[in-house]
Image (cartoon, rainbow, N blue to C red; front, side):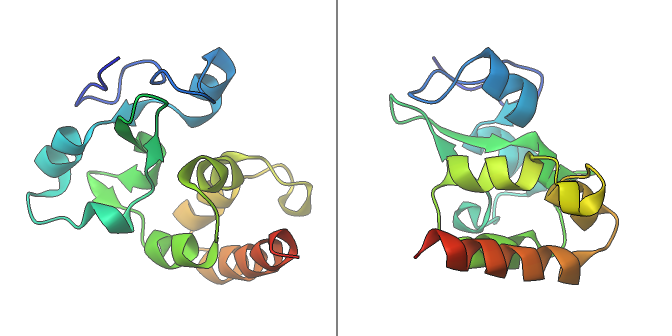
Length: 128
């Protein structure tokens, strides 16, 4: 299944995709949609990207605000040593530590250092 350039579509087909995934992680842009929104010179390797089972690269729309990648997201992704699906789940999952808010919500609220500290802690625990 092709991924639409607009963020108003369902989750792409893939080994980990399904209705629950779309509710949590979707909608998605394809690379052409990201380039149209952010600019042709965007380095998509620095964005959150998930790959479907058939090799389609999809970019969750939640990482953008007014057509721009969220400030600090690139650094958070570099710290989280995991695949795109795991990173996306980590960013969108509500945290008891933060009153049910997700890391992406904290980033939107300018709480970069809080998210960075938690990313370091969690990533270290994953590699043990």
